[in-house]
Image (cartoon, rainbow, N blue to C red):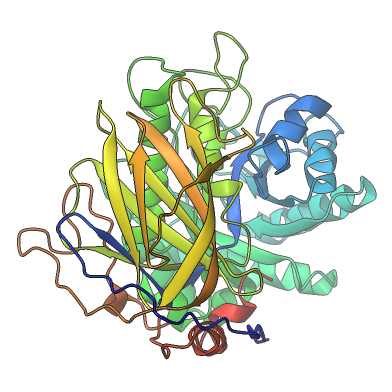
Amino acid sequence: MKLKYILAAVVVLAGTPSTSARAADAIVRPNQLHQRITGFGASSAWSADFTDAEADLLFTTDSGVGLTLLRLRIPPDGCTQDDCGAAAAVKAQARGATVWAAPWSPPAAWKSNGDVDNGGTLLPEHADDWANALVAYVQWMQTQGVTISKLSGQNEPTTKVSYESCIYTPSALADFIGNHLGPALHAANLDTTKIVAPETQDWQTFPTFASAILSSSAASSAVGVLATHSYGQSAPAAYPAADQANKELWQTEVYDQAKHVDAGIASGIRVALMMHSALVEASVNAWHYWWILPVMGNAALFDQASDAPAKRLYAMGNFSRFVRPGFYRVDTTTTGPTPGVSISAYADGPSKQIVIVVINENAGPVSQAILFDGVAAGSWMSWVTSSTKSSVSSGSPVDGGSNPNELVVSLDPQSVTTFRGLVTGPGPKLPAIPDPPDAPGGGPGCACSTPARRPDGMAAGVALAAIFAAAWRGRRKQAGRGA
């Protein structure tokens, strides 16, 4: 399926002021597309139902942060209304969120250790039983009014912990998905419920599991999303094989692991940087925090001590409220990065919106210039998350200045700021400017991405219609992903 967005009625601006890049300028290139955004979310596993007010804050864009994905836990021994999170899922779904689910362990009787906890493996003679139980979960949720859009094969298949867990080798997980779970979904006429896998604990173990899945035609055809968590020391990294196999790439669990409990802006900055890294360095289509409601430490978007939303929820909202499903990340480079400033940009063809998310780690304000390659933009608004502000505010107009190809902004200290503007017409084509030699792929605070990593970005003409229409048509594989 192809997107057929074509922008018409191009406004040609005569006498556009010339623009030249300077050190520390950010350059946004809307004609160079990267991944399509599916959404942002978190999990309600083991937690209570949301109040209506909490659901509004979490899943709406008028008074909330606009999360679009909810990850549920599948209990080992079947469902009741409470332990499956159906009530919370109904509220999230009613506010536009997509719901999906993951198992932590099969029933104890079907495992090698006779326990839902402490690892163990799925007994081969019970592989079909477990696959059918997961299908029964999807069907039960349907009776509760919840559509499970995607189903994980297993949460963290290499992790043995004292709570629910189950161990798989890469080949064993590929076998379970390809020869048991996939066929069970097909037999139940649930072919549209694609599988999310391997949901490894970290980026380091992810490629081995993902390769095993892609190497199996049965497993690969059943899997719609390749996914990993982002714990440990390994940094997010691009995985071109996902594009080649027409799979989305999701980051499905991580949290701020600072040793001290922190509900303030410092945690918000750390979470925003994690999101930036996954989106820019790994080109993920979707990103998830761990828990939503408070459970322990910094593991949830709400603060454990106060039960109030933590600043990390609002920092996440700087992405999720404005970078909506169907947007594309666009190329953003710098001539010499402003230390402590990270920038990513996103575009939507039908609405002609450009969204720019800027993270300022610095203790003081920073002036940042943003140049636009090939387009002119105007009518800017901003939303700030800082120690005193949050992204669910009504927003503030931004004086873009007289040059529609440049936006100069002042960033609050320790802040995450979203700028949203409208493309108004074509602008000058800026020359390619190499990144500093000491910052390959982007140095500290770099807004750079590496277009060569992903084959799906393309350059278009100078005219605005050509830029967006050709670029969107060029997303031949990505356009149908996430459906």
